[in-house]
Image (cartoon, rainbow, N blue to C red):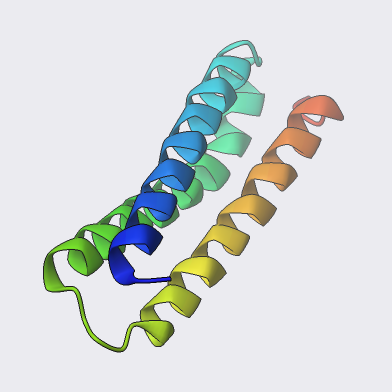
Length: 100
């Protein structure tokens, strides 16, 4: 797989994660104030990872390095971290852990 194909796939993944974040925000909006406050660090962490991945995909698209395995691994690792944080947030919301 070349860099161009990889970047297209990564862009599709980013689009999916951005949609999931939008959905997560909608769910968090329905939480009481205390729950929103507790969720803020999780959501900010997810946003930072998605922003970082977006920057890396943009860099790959413009730089087109001949050896990009390291960058791909770092992006894949970041996707894994986003997935864990996202699942933790969903678990937190679903478990009703937003009481005072």
